[in-house]
Image: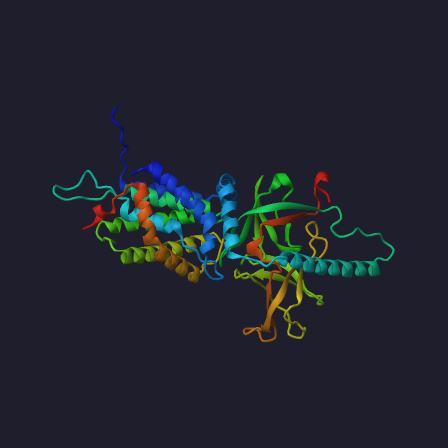
Amino acid sequence: MARKHIKVAQGMLFIWLMLAGLILLLSPQNITGKFGFAFARIFRWPLTIGRGISLARTYQLPEGTTTKTELENHLANLAQQLLQEHQRVEEFARLRVRFPLEGAALVPASVVTSLLDASRSELVINMGRDDGVEEHQFVLANNSIIGTVLRVEPRQARVRLLTDPASKIEARIENLKIYRVMYGTGANSAKIPNISRKHKITKGLRVFACTKPGFLDTPLIIGTVTKCVKDDEKPLLWDITVEPVCDIQTLTRVYTIAMNPPQELRL
Amino acid sequence: MRWLRFTVLVVVVAVLQAGFLDRIALTQLNIKPDLFLVLLVFFALYGLPKSKAAPAGGYRFDISPAIITSFVIGFAADIAVIGSAMGTRMLSFGIVGSLLAYLHRVIAARKMLYQAFVIFVAGLAAGLLHGFLTSLKGAAVLNFRLIACTALYSAILGPFLFLPCAWWMRIRTHQFRR
Protein backbone atom coordinates (compact mmCIF):
# COMPACT_ATOMS: atom_id res chain seq x y z
CA MET A 1 0.00 0.00 0.00
CA ALA A 2 1.38 3.35 -0.95
CA ARG A 3 2.29 5.67 1.92
CA LYS A 4 0.15 8.73 2.16
CA HIS A 5 2.17 11.95 2.35
CA ILE A 6 0.70 15.02 3.97
CA LYS A 7 2.12 18.08 2.28
CA VAL A 8 2.32 21.25 4.29
CA ALA A 9 3.94 24.42 3.01
CA GLN A 10 7.15 25.35 4.82
CA GLY A 11 5.82 28.76 5.78
CA MET A 12 2.62 27.32 7.19
CA LEU A 13 4.57 24.67 9.12
CA PHE A 14 6.77 27.36 10.64
CA ILE A 15 3.75 29.47 11.64
CA TRP A 16 1.98 26.50 13.25
CA LEU A 17 5.04 25.57 15.28
CA MET A 18 5.56 29.21 16.29
CA LEU A 19 1.97 29.31 17.50
CA ALA A 20 2.53 26.13 19.51
CA GLY A 21 5.61 27.72 21.09
CA LEU A 22 3.71 30.90 21.90
CA ILE A 23 0.89 28.92 23.51
CA LEU A 24 3.46 27.15 25.69
CA LEU A 25 5.13 30.46 26.50
CA LEU A 26 1.88 32.10 27.54
CA SER A 27 0.55 29.11 29.47
CA PRO A 28 0.73 29.31 33.27
CA GLN A 29 3.97 28.02 34.74
CA ASN A 30 2.20 25.63 37.12
CA ILE A 31 0.78 23.77 34.11
CA THR A 32 3.84 23.78 31.85
CA GLY A 33 6.13 23.01 34.80
CA LYS A 34 4.60 19.52 34.92
CA PHE A 35 6.51 18.61 31.73
CA GLY A 36 9.83 19.17 33.46
CA PHE A 37 8.79 17.24 36.54
CA ALA A 38 7.53 14.39 34.37
CA PHE A 39 10.91 14.28 32.62
CA ALA A 40 12.73 14.23 35.96
CA ARG A 41 10.42 11.49 37.23
CA ILE A 42 10.75 9.29 34.16
CA PHE A 43 14.52 9.66 33.93
CA ARG A 44 15.17 9.87 37.68
CA TRP A 45 17.45 6.86 37.63
CA PRO A 46 19.94 8.06 34.95
CA LEU A 47 19.79 11.63 36.25
CA THR A 48 20.68 10.54 39.78
CA ILE A 49 23.49 8.34 38.47
CA GLY A 50 24.80 11.21 36.35
CA ARG A 51 24.82 13.53 39.32
CA GLY A 52 26.57 10.89 41.43
CA ILE A 53 29.26 10.41 38.78
CA SER A 54 29.77 14.16 38.45
CA LEU A 55 30.11 14.60 42.19
CA ALA A 56 32.44 11.63 42.62
CA ARG A 57 34.69 12.97 39.92
CA THR A 58 34.59 16.65 40.76
CA TYR A 59 34.64 16.72 44.52
CA GLN A 60 36.95 14.53 46.51
CA LEU A 61 36.31 15.78 50.03
CA PRO A 62 38.63 14.62 52.77
CA GLU A 63 37.06 12.06 55.05
CA GLY A 64 35.22 13.60 57.97
CA THR A 65 34.80 17.03 56.36
CA THR A 66 31.03 16.76 56.14
CA THR A 67 30.72 15.51 59.70
CA LYS A 68 32.84 18.38 60.99
CA THR A 69 30.78 20.96 59.09
CA GLU A 70 27.58 19.34 60.29
CA LEU A 71 28.72 19.41 63.90
CA GLU A 72 29.87 23.02 63.66
CA ASN A 73 26.55 24.04 62.16
CA HIS A 74 24.68 22.07 64.79
CA LEU A 75 26.67 23.80 67.51
CA ALA A 76 25.93 27.22 66.02
CA ASN A 77 22.23 26.38 65.82
CA LEU A 78 22.14 25.16 69.40
CA ALA A 79 23.88 28.32 70.58
CA GLN A 80 21.28 30.43 68.81
CA GLN A 81 18.44 28.33 70.17
CA LEU A 82 19.87 28.66 73.66
CA LEU A 83 20.14 32.41 73.23
CA GLN A 84 16.57 32.56 72.01
CA GLU A 85 15.40 30.46 74.92
CA HIS A 86 17.22 32.70 77.39
CA GLN A 87 15.52 35.72 75.88
CA ARG A 88 12.16 34.00 76.13
CA VAL A 89 12.79 32.99 79.70
CA GLU A 90 13.70 36.54 80.53
CA GLU A 91 10.65 37.94 78.81
CA PHE A 92 8.08 35.37 79.84
CA ALA A 93 9.55 33.87 82.94
CA ARG A 94 6.25 32.54 84.16
CA LEU A 95 4.96 31.18 80.89
CA ARG A 96 5.63 27.71 79.56
CA VAL A 97 7.12 27.81 76.09
CA ARG A 98 7.51 25.11 73.54
CA PHE A 99 11.00 23.97 72.59
CA PRO A 100 11.99 25.12 69.06
CA LEU A 101 11.21 22.62 66.34
CA GLU A 102 9.13 20.59 68.79
CA GLY A 103 6.40 18.87 66.82
CA ALA A 104 8.07 19.73 63.54
CA ALA A 105 9.09 17.12 61.00
CA LEU A 106 12.16 16.83 58.85
CA VAL A 107 11.26 15.23 55.54
CA PRO A 108 14.38 13.56 54.12
CA ALA A 109 14.81 13.81 50.36
CA SER A 110 17.41 12.85 47.80
CA VAL A 111 18.63 15.35 45.26
CA VAL A 112 17.54 14.18 41.80
CA THR A 113 19.32 16.87 39.87
CA SER A 114 20.75 20.32 40.39
CA LEU A 115 20.49 23.38 38.21
CA LEU A 116 23.42 25.53 39.13
CA ASP A 117 24.59 28.35 36.94
CA ALA A 118 24.79 32.12 37.05
CA SER A 119 21.12 32.59 36.30
CA ARG A 120 19.65 29.88 38.52
CA SER A 121 20.52 27.84 41.58
CA GLU A 122 17.95 25.17 42.18
CA LEU A 123 17.67 21.55 43.22
CA VAL A 124 15.07 19.00 42.28
CA ILE A 125 14.30 16.63 45.15
CA ASN A 126 12.42 13.35 45.13
CA MET A 127 9.86 14.23 47.80
CA GLY A 128 6.72 16.18 47.15
CA ARG A 129 3.26 17.09 48.35
CA ASP A 130 2.39 13.46 49.10
CA ASP A 131 5.32 13.29 51.52
CA GLY A 132 4.49 16.45 53.45
CA VAL A 133 6.56 18.94 51.45
CA GLU A 134 4.92 22.33 50.89
CA GLU A 135 5.87 25.51 49.13
CA HIS A 136 7.99 28.04 51.06
CA GLN A 137 9.20 25.44 53.56
CA PHE A 138 12.83 25.83 54.56
CA VAL A 139 15.30 23.23 53.35
CA LEU A 140 18.06 21.95 55.56
CA ALA A 141 21.35 20.27 54.67
CA ASN A 142 24.27 19.59 56.99
CA ASN A 143 22.27 21.30 59.74
CA SER A 144 22.15 24.57 57.81
CA ILE A 145 19.46 26.25 55.80
CA ILE A 146 20.20 26.05 52.08
CA GLY A 147 17.02 27.46 50.57
CA THR A 148 13.27 27.21 50.38
CA VAL A 149 10.83 25.01 48.51
CA LEU A 150 9.80 26.82 45.35
CA ARG A 151 7.32 24.50 43.69
CA VAL A 152 5.77 21.22 44.73
CA GLU A 153 4.44 18.33 42.73
CA PRO A 154 2.90 15.17 44.21
CA ARG A 155 6.21 13.26 44.24
CA GLN A 156 8.86 15.90 43.58
CA ALA A 157 9.74 19.46 44.49
CA ARG A 158 12.00 22.25 43.35
CA VAL A 159 14.20 23.98 45.90
CA ARG A 160 15.36 27.53 45.33
CA LEU A 161 18.78 27.82 46.91
CA LEU A 162 19.80 30.86 48.91
CA THR A 163 22.35 31.66 46.19
CA ASP A 164 19.70 31.90 43.46
CA PRO A 165 19.38 35.46 42.09
CA ALA A 166 15.64 35.37 42.84
CA SER A 167 16.09 34.10 46.41
CA LYS A 168 15.10 36.43 49.26
CA ILE A 169 15.46 35.14 52.80
CA GLU A 170 15.29 37.24 55.93
CA ALA A 171 18.56 36.85 57.78
CA ARG A 172 20.49 38.20 60.72
CA ILE A 173 24.20 38.44 61.34
CA GLU A 174 25.40 36.92 64.59
CA ASN A 175 25.57 39.41 67.48
CA LEU A 176 23.57 42.02 65.57
CA LYS A 177 19.91 42.63 66.18
CA ILE A 178 19.32 43.79 62.65
CA TYR A 179 17.16 41.82 60.27
CA ARG A 180 17.73 42.18 56.55
CA VAL A 181 16.53 40.41 53.43
CA MET A 182 19.45 38.43 52.07
CA TYR A 183 19.37 37.93 48.31
CA GLY A 184 21.32 35.50 46.14
CA THR A 185 23.86 36.55 43.56
CA GLY A 186 23.98 33.40 41.43
CA ALA A 187 27.71 32.92 42.05
CA ASN A 188 27.45 30.56 45.02
CA SER A 189 26.99 33.49 47.37
CA ALA A 190 24.42 35.93 48.68
CA LYS A 191 24.42 39.56 49.73
CA ILE A 192 23.04 41.31 52.77
CA PRO A 193 22.24 44.90 51.84
CA ASN A 194 21.67 48.09 53.79
CA ILE A 195 23.79 47.51 56.86
CA SER A 196 25.38 50.66 58.15
CA ARG A 197 29.14 50.82 58.54
CA LYS A 198 28.74 51.82 62.16
CA HIS A 199 28.21 48.12 62.91
CA LYS A 200 31.33 46.07 63.40
CA ILE A 201 31.18 43.23 60.93
CA THR A 202 34.08 40.97 60.23
CA LYS A 203 34.80 38.06 57.96
CA GLY A 204 33.78 34.74 59.47
CA LEU A 205 30.72 35.93 61.36
CA ARG A 206 27.81 33.55 61.11
CA VAL A 207 24.52 34.45 59.47
CA PHE A 208 21.20 32.99 60.64
CA ALA A 209 17.88 32.63 58.86
CA CYS A 210 15.26 34.49 60.85
CA THR A 211 12.21 32.86 62.27
CA LYS A 212 9.15 32.86 60.05
CA PRO A 213 5.79 31.96 61.55
CA GLY A 214 4.56 28.64 60.26
CA PHE A 215 7.84 27.79 58.56
CA LEU A 216 10.66 28.24 61.06
CA ASP A 217 10.36 28.98 64.75
CA THR A 218 14.03 29.14 65.62
CA PRO A 219 16.98 30.80 63.87
CA LEU A 220 19.15 28.34 61.97
CA ILE A 221 22.54 28.94 60.47
CA ILE A 222 22.49 29.83 56.78
CA GLY A 223 26.00 30.99 55.98
CA THR A 224 29.07 32.91 57.01
CA VAL A 225 30.31 36.35 56.07
CA THR A 226 33.13 35.81 53.59
CA LYS A 227 33.61 39.39 52.45
CA CYS A 228 32.78 42.69 54.07
CA VAL A 229 33.94 45.81 52.28
CA LYS A 230 32.77 49.37 51.86
CA ASP A 231 29.93 49.65 49.36
CA ASP A 232 31.28 51.62 46.39
CA GLU A 233 27.89 53.05 45.49
CA LYS A 234 26.76 53.76 49.06
CA PRO A 235 29.88 54.56 51.09
CA LEU A 236 27.97 54.63 54.39
CA LEU A 237 26.96 51.00 54.01
CA TRP A 238 28.72 47.65 54.03
CA ASP A 239 28.86 45.40 51.00
CA ILE A 240 28.47 42.02 52.71
CA THR A 241 28.94 38.73 50.91
CA VAL A 242 27.68 35.55 52.53
CA GLU A 243 28.53 32.04 51.45
CA PRO A 244 26.63 28.90 52.46
CA VAL A 245 28.19 26.86 55.27
CA CYS A 246 27.84 23.62 53.36
CA ASP A 247 29.01 22.75 49.89
CA ILE A 248 25.73 22.92 48.00
CA GLN A 249 27.16 21.36 44.85
CA THR A 250 28.01 18.12 46.61
CA LEU A 251 24.68 17.66 48.35
CA THR A 252 22.89 14.40 47.80
CA ARG A 253 20.50 14.47 50.74
CA VAL A 254 18.46 17.35 52.13
CA TYR A 255 15.59 17.78 54.61
CA THR A 256 12.57 20.01 54.35
CA ILE A 257 11.26 21.45 57.59
CA ALA A 258 7.53 20.90 58.05
CA MET A 259 6.51 22.94 61.09
CA ASN A 260 2.92 21.68 61.11
CA PRO A 261 3.19 18.16 59.79
CA PRO A 262 0.56 15.45 59.92
CA GLN A 263 0.76 13.31 63.08
CA GLU A 264 2.63 10.43 61.41
CA LEU A 265 5.51 12.70 60.31
CA ARG A 266 6.17 14.34 63.69
CA LEU A 267 9.62 14.13 65.26
CA MET B 1 14.38 11.71 7.84
CA ARG B 2 14.54 8.85 10.33
CA TRP B 3 12.18 10.12 12.99
CA LEU B 4 12.51 7.19 15.39
CA ARG B 5 16.28 7.56 15.47
CA PHE B 6 15.85 11.30 15.87
CA THR B 7 13.55 10.78 18.89
CA VAL B 8 16.02 8.42 20.56
CA LEU B 9 18.86 10.88 19.92
CA VAL B 10 16.91 13.78 21.43
CA VAL B 11 16.00 11.76 24.54
CA VAL B 12 19.62 10.66 25.04
CA VAL B 13 20.83 14.23 24.62
CA ALA B 14 18.19 15.48 27.09
CA VAL B 15 19.33 13.01 29.75
CA LEU B 16 23.00 13.79 29.10
CA GLN B 17 22.36 17.53 29.23
CA ALA B 18 20.31 17.35 32.42
CA GLY B 19 22.36 14.85 34.37
CA PHE B 20 25.86 14.24 33.10
CA LEU B 21 27.35 17.51 31.90
CA ASP B 22 28.17 18.90 35.36
CA ARG B 23 31.29 16.81 35.09
CA ILE B 24 32.72 19.02 32.39
CA ALA B 25 31.31 22.31 33.69
CA LEU B 26 33.80 25.15 33.88
CA THR B 27 34.31 28.06 36.30
CA GLN B 28 32.01 29.18 39.06
CA LEU B 29 29.40 30.12 36.46
CA ASN B 30 29.03 26.39 35.80
CA ILE B 31 29.42 26.77 32.06
CA LYS B 32 28.43 23.63 30.20
CA PRO B 33 28.26 22.89 26.48
CA ASP B 34 24.73 22.99 25.11
CA LEU B 35 24.21 19.65 23.38
CA PHE B 36 20.79 20.78 22.16
CA LEU B 37 22.46 23.65 20.33
CA VAL B 38 24.90 21.25 18.66
CA LEU B 39 21.99 19.03 17.65
CA LEU B 40 20.07 22.04 16.36
CA VAL B 41 22.92 23.13 14.12
CA PHE B 42 23.56 19.57 12.96
CA PHE B 43 19.99 19.07 11.78
CA ALA B 44 19.77 22.56 10.33
CA LEU B 45 22.89 21.82 8.26
CA TYR B 46 22.51 18.15 7.48
CA GLY B 47 18.87 17.26 8.07
CA LEU B 48 17.80 18.63 4.71
CA PRO B 49 16.65 16.02 2.20
CA LYS B 50 16.71 16.97 -1.47
CA SER B 51 13.35 18.25 -2.61
CA LYS B 52 11.40 16.27 -5.20
CA ALA B 53 10.46 19.55 -6.81
CA ALA B 54 14.04 20.24 -7.73
CA PRO B 55 14.74 22.03 -10.99
CA ALA B 56 16.02 19.88 -13.85
CA GLY B 57 19.74 19.22 -13.62
CA GLY B 58 20.02 20.76 -10.15
CA TYR B 59 18.74 20.19 -6.64
CA ARG B 60 16.91 22.02 -3.92
CA PHE B 61 16.78 21.19 -0.21
CA ASP B 62 13.49 20.70 1.59
CA ILE B 63 13.79 22.58 4.87
CA SER B 64 10.54 21.26 6.41
CA PRO B 65 12.32 18.51 8.45
CA ALA B 66 14.83 21.09 9.69
CA ILE B 67 12.00 23.36 10.86
CA ILE B 68 10.33 20.49 12.71
CA THR B 69 13.57 19.25 14.28
CA SER B 70 14.47 22.79 15.42
CA PHE B 71 11.21 23.25 17.27
CA VAL B 72 11.27 19.72 18.68
CA ILE B 73 14.85 20.14 19.95
CA GLY B 74 13.83 23.45 21.51
CA PHE B 75 10.85 21.79 23.19
CA ALA B 76 13.11 19.01 24.52
CA ALA B 77 15.52 21.65 25.84
CA ASP B 78 12.64 23.38 27.62
CA ILE B 79 11.71 20.11 29.31
CA ALA B 80 15.23 19.02 30.17
CA VAL B 81 16.01 22.30 31.95
CA ILE B 82 13.50 21.71 34.75
CA GLY B 83 11.80 24.80 36.02
CA SER B 84 12.67 27.04 33.11
CA ALA B 85 9.95 29.05 31.39
CA MET B 86 8.39 26.70 28.86
CA GLY B 87 8.30 27.72 25.23
CA THR B 88 11.27 30.09 25.36
CA ARG B 89 13.79 27.62 23.97
CA MET B 90 11.23 26.12 21.62
CA LEU B 91 10.71 29.52 20.03
CA SER B 92 14.35 30.63 20.07
CA PHE B 93 15.67 27.31 18.75
CA GLY B 94 12.84 27.10 16.22
CA ILE B 95 13.53 30.55 14.79
CA VAL B 96 17.33 30.17 14.75
CA GLY B 97 17.21 26.60 13.39
CA SER B 98 14.76 27.50 10.63
CA LEU B 99 16.80 30.55 9.67
CA LEU B 100 19.97 28.48 9.63
CA ALA B 101 18.38 25.79 7.45
CA TYR B 102 17.11 28.46 5.09
CA LEU B 103 20.55 30.05 4.87
CA HIS B 104 22.19 26.66 4.37
CA ARG B 105 20.56 26.47 0.98
CA VAL B 106 22.99 29.17 -0.11
CA ILE B 107 25.86 28.93 2.40
CA ALA B 108 27.69 25.68 3.21
CA ALA B 109 29.65 24.97 6.40
CA ARG B 110 31.88 22.08 5.42
CA LYS B 111 35.02 22.55 7.46
CA MET B 112 35.03 22.05 11.21
CA LEU B 113 36.09 25.62 11.78
CA TYR B 114 33.09 26.94 9.89
CA GLN B 115 30.82 24.51 11.72
CA ALA B 116 32.19 25.77 15.03
CA PHE B 117 31.59 29.34 13.89
CA VAL B 118 28.00 28.51 12.92
CA ILE B 119 27.42 26.86 16.32
CA PHE B 120 28.85 29.90 18.08
CA VAL B 121 26.71 32.38 16.16
CA ALA B 122 23.60 30.21 16.51
CA GLY B 123 24.34 29.86 20.24
CA LEU B 124 24.58 33.61 20.67
CA ALA B 125 21.40 34.25 18.69
CA ALA B 126 19.39 31.51 20.39
CA GLY B 127 20.75 32.46 23.82
CA LEU B 128 19.88 36.12 23.43
CA LEU B 129 16.43 35.32 22.09
CA HIS B 130 15.85 32.82 24.90
CA GLY B 131 17.08 35.36 27.46
CA PHE B 132 14.82 38.02 26.03
CA LEU B 133 11.75 35.76 26.08
CA THR B 134 12.57 34.56 29.59
CA SER B 135 12.96 38.10 30.87
CA LEU B 136 9.59 38.94 29.30
CA LYS B 137 8.11 36.31 31.58
CA GLY B 138 10.09 37.81 34.45
CA ALA B 139 11.69 34.45 35.15
CA ALA B 140 15.40 35.26 35.03
CA VAL B 141 17.99 37.90 34.34
CA LEU B 142 19.77 37.98 30.97
CA ASN B 143 23.39 36.92 31.50
CA PHE B 144 25.47 37.81 28.42
CA ARG B 145 28.65 36.26 29.79
CA LEU B 146 26.96 32.92 30.39
CA ILE B 147 25.39 32.95 26.91
CA ALA B 148 28.69 33.78 25.19
CA CYS B 149 30.71 31.23 27.19
CA THR B 150 28.13 28.48 26.62
CA ALA B 151 28.10 29.23 22.88
CA LEU B 152 31.90 29.15 22.77
CA TYR B 153 32.14 25.89 24.72
CA SER B 154 29.51 24.31 22.46
CA ALA B 155 31.32 25.60 19.37
CA ILE B 156 34.58 23.99 20.47
CA LEU B 157 32.96 20.64 21.24
CA GLY B 158 30.17 20.64 18.67
CA PRO B 159 31.93 19.76 15.38
CA PHE B 160 33.37 16.62 17.00
CA LEU B 161 29.85 15.48 17.92
CA PHE B 162 28.61 15.84 14.34
CA LEU B 163 30.26 12.56 13.35
CA PRO B 164 28.46 10.31 15.89
CA CYS B 165 25.22 12.17 15.15
CA ALA B 166 25.66 11.58 11.40
CA TRP B 167 26.47 7.92 12.03
CA TRP B 168 23.41 7.41 14.23
CA MET B 169 21.09 9.26 11.85
CA ARG B 170 22.61 7.50 8.81
CA ILE B 171 23.19 10.87 7.19
CA ARG B 172 25.97 11.22 4.65
CA THR B 173 27.36 14.64 5.34
CA HIS B 174 29.37 14.73 2.08
CA GLN B 175 26.18 15.00 0.03
CA PHE B 176 25.91 18.58 1.26
CA ARG B 177 29.14 19.66 -0.36
CA ARG B 178 28.84 22.32 -2.99
